[in-house]
Length: 490
Ligand code: MN
Image 1 (tube, rainbow, N blue to C red):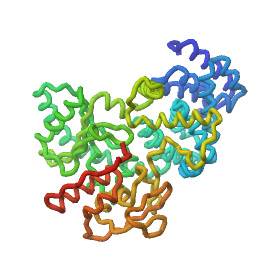
Image 2 (tube, rainbow, N blue to C red):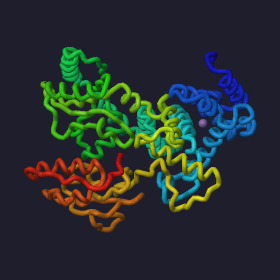
Image 3 (cartoon, helix red, strand yellow):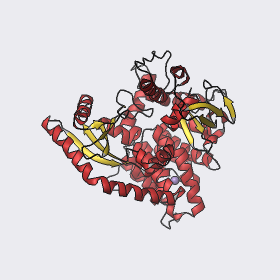
Image 4 (cartoon, helix red, strand yellow):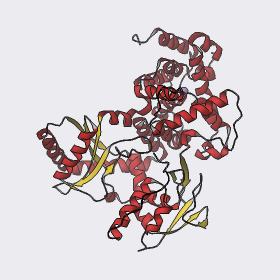
């Protein structure tokens, strides 16, 4: 603590005094919690005002300290952040599910989110708060554990994803899932460990073969193995009829290299060593995922008949995937958006536009400008809609998606054999646009096949990609006509 700046030391002193005598459910002094939030924000390289707001985030709500006192001591910005986190917490209690979070409702929570979103830092402080609460969830009664864990899965994990904080998202998902479905969690954990043990030798052999080839080409690299997280394995199994043999990326070997060109070079080297599986080469460098994720993926069959996924990316792409907007980075990016707003730069990475939109709407709201409820959008999710399977699983799709996009998202075979769709219980035309909250059911017929006419009935890049490769397989010399109009999916 001695390394801390004088302002941070002062904040710790004030918070310790304010929370004096209060205990957490774990029985520890309350101050442990704000200090843990502080530590997380420091790990994430947040700026000093955010760190101070993190230390003070529970004082206004739970102690006699006032916002005015915080402003007098630490300035307007810190007071704004603390107020934002407090308001966000209040609005959230009583929230039942993700639906209440979403655009059409135009409810107070939405407005608050936008109001707090005027400064994205509020959301990041809230994430740190939630992450520490999850880490110490064991101290709460089981029904509360489940409630908080479920809310974390539905709201905070997607939020972390939207902020491109991959590592935080995974930790939220893993911890929450453990509480939501402990039996399943243990089951899958065991299954993963068994797989890993069985494949260990063959994986090492594959890794060595690649490493040797890279050394021969004098390519600098670092390599590690990554095991698929339990929660994403659970989600993926649901898509593949619980057939674990259909899941090829339980274990992946990850190569981090110096630049983009080298990424493609390494991909070529891997393909010269092992046989790539059909349709499993994914170029997320040229076409990043919606959350900004970049990497090359390929699944190969090694000489020992082991199926291995390789992921190849640069250090920068790796850091971005792991730490996202909360890295030092984040702060640069936010500066970037204001530089854009002030006309100092004229290009903004597409995946950052939502920050700008959020800030603009927030500024309008803050200045008392009236905003049409109907036009009000939760910009965090503005380019996504959330729809449901009949069983109630939430599927997110880019806005503009139609039933086939949904079908292909579930599984490419469900897409291929789709012969109709029901939305909210009614049969619909396949060109029907899906809306927020729709329950979508896909009707399939065995042996039915996709046809080129479907190209006008898919919107997402994912579905289009799957459909085109299926059409290639069915129709010799198939040439898709170029798509007109813009796809909003970045
Ligand atoms: Mn807290």
